[in-house]
Image: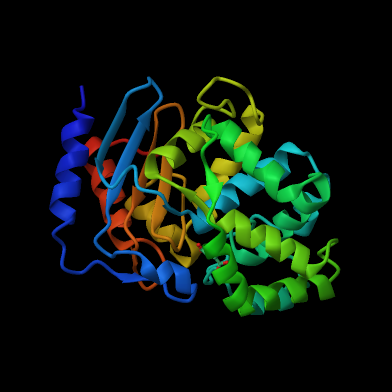
Length: 304
Ligand code: GLU
């Protein structure tokens, strides 16, 4: 039997001494305050066991990891227009690239790049009565944790500097692919990205995708087929223009965020979350990618 505790702690101990740790995101000023030496790993096994190392219980800004959560709720609403308004192809471009959006008539390549997540945010703004409150409640429910909350400073910091996202949203609006006002949709989007969670909380939240749509309390939130689709989109689109590299090196569906978090999962087996704020040139956590690669190599546990 694999000794996950030793494996995870050895990986953490070896990598934390790396001199090259990547660069903390600074285009959202509030994120630049993160310590590049923070490093946590948390594993939630489906049999109930948990394993952790380092800063696994320190809250951080989940940023784009939230796009999977908003997508899952939009899918659960069974909005028939979702897949006519956003595609499911890898973009091969950075998360905030706008040129493809114009070439492809305002249909974002996938729901995990910014433009796609903004369309998903628009759907949630239409479907929810009180979008920010109701979305937070959804996340708390699937996490089985009522303490999760937004970091309002991060949301405001992103609003003040979110020129690229305003450009994307305006472009979407000009192509008739946003039903609500740009300001309303982006206010929701900036808050969802500003959700603050620990590695442990993220692992417990993403349990729902590893467990065929049932959360850690065994309550169904999405169907088996919806969970399958979300995992497929994470595998093909979860790491910006490094999604191929992540599948090649790690071999798990997952999602990263510019706060330095990565969540990856093996359906029916486990969810593994890492947090290290230093990013590589493609915007993915440098130590996190290495930790996950070492984990699947040492355990032989991947979808392939
Ligand atoms: N809120 C960030 C943005 O829209 C998310 C980026 C990310 O984590 O990839 O720029």
